[in-house]
Amino acid sequence: MTVAAERIDRLHGLARAAAADGDQERARYYVRLARRVAERNRLTLPREFRRFTCDACDAYLRPGKNARVRTRDGHVVITCDCGAQARYPYEE
Image (cartoon, rainbow, N blue to C red; front, top):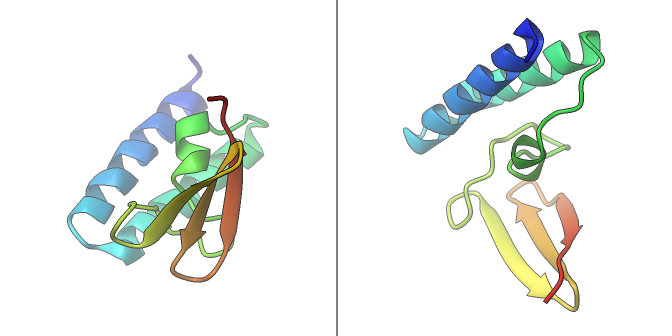
């Protein structure tokens, strides 16, 4: 694991903790920082990180708090408070 990957993993944990404490702006800062580190080092973000962040507003998504999760035919729809939607396939 590279230093950049370790830093992204650490920032993911910090964003999750900040969102759990209700500090959305700090969580948003950590998400932006992690994305910037990944960009500069040509790394892909981990799947769990991508699924729990909003691409439009960089919020760390917490289902039931600032995100709505619905299942449709063969995919999950996650809607952020900003209105952005993300769809992920799943198999039954």
